Image 1 (cartoon, helix red, strand yellow):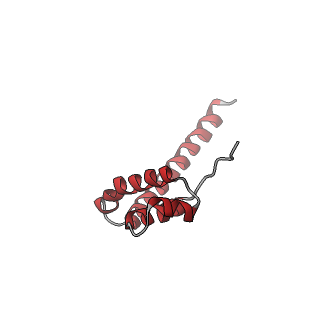
Image 2 (cartoon, rainbow, N blue to C red; image 1 turned 90 degrees about the vertical axis):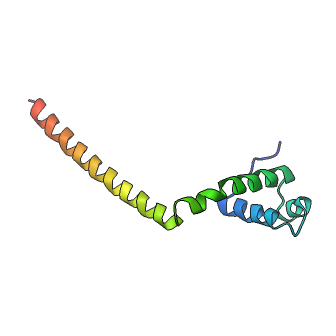
Image 3 (tube, rainbow, N blue to C red; image 1 turned 180 degrees about the horizontal axis):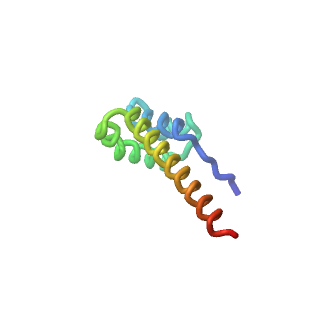
Length: 94
């Protein structure tokens, strides 16, 4: 039985872009990257389906900043809940 391979997102994108270019056949790309042609077609479809999202909400860096803000907010909430828990455990325990 063949071991299942996990490819990185960067590799998948590289293969999908090669398929989108159209300068080689899917069979040639499959041979070059040692990936099944059906898998290449799937990655190509996923890339084309999600390409609109890249331009929908601005640059990916903006999303990183939003994520950083959300993480800071969640860390603050964790700190608040930890303080409340500690306070309540001290007052409720004799």
